[in-house]
Length: 417
Image (cartoon, rainbow, N blue to C red; front, side):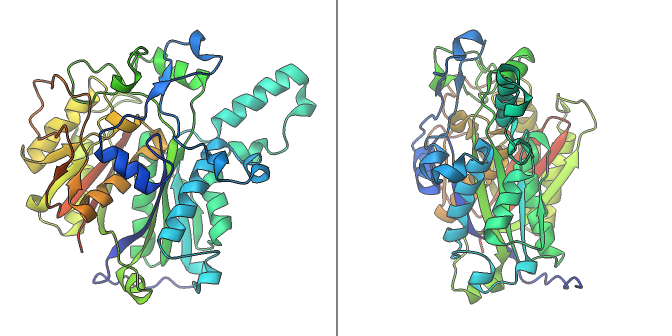
């Protein structure tokens, strides 16, 4: 099968959205609570919580097992469950039901790209405990498919009947955004017509939390869960772990219109770079991050002045927040309206870029940007415009940033039709 020529006059658009997050088990609830400035962070109630230093997190507001049939759920890791919930919503939102073939699509022209930062680590640890308690013969034969980082993408691919390719970028906290970038490439290179993209993560476990805590990367505001994630605030002391999934459906504008679908927005460009600076610390100059953003904007053909909104990576860490804010002010201007939605959702690691891409798309569609909560005492170096309440404004084009350990940088540029 030969690759098709790219039609540069046929933009790639977003036609389906799906999400399950600490703010809601579907896109509508997630968006409503995001605009309301609600926090999805709460105290952990598990029996192991009192034994660890960080005892707060952003659990999914709706447990995936409430949606997925019980027998199927038992065969899936929690990150896989979340991905399927979000994918089902996005696929239906795009106007599809059943497999790609049942919708009149060529399965060989449908692809899936879903990233994750850690994969099925909770299943791995649970089965490790079973082996030590009951012996190796009691380890589940489903452990490997549950643990595989590519499992969420593979299960979605099976469900929609995708045969153009099923891919899993693993780029730490940039994974979800990088998956969306990969989906754009697949369509623009003529390798697929419809691509299901996004990210998923569920690793709220004492070992994972303790690992991050030992790095001093996490907030220890155990007594104030809803106020713990506070990007740009002088009192920020680290990120708060969250879980969930965000999925988008991408296709060409011509195919969307042929199906009578009105797109949410255009995915105009993406930029992916690397810092080559440190395994966990971002380049303090933010040069690799800024370069990813510049590539995304230039690739889209949108004027820099039209990029009026940014959904920032801003995790609530002392160093990372201001490094990003400073280069954003230089690249786009101090009047750029910036939202740090992790203040409400916590940090979903490999799913962060995907749910934040959904928030960016909805900001463009609805001409309203989400607030940043817990910003009581802004950092002195903060010069961009960070609303503390949802703000109505014309959002012509918006940038979504995601950065990950290892120096991974991914930026996505969405704009109106």
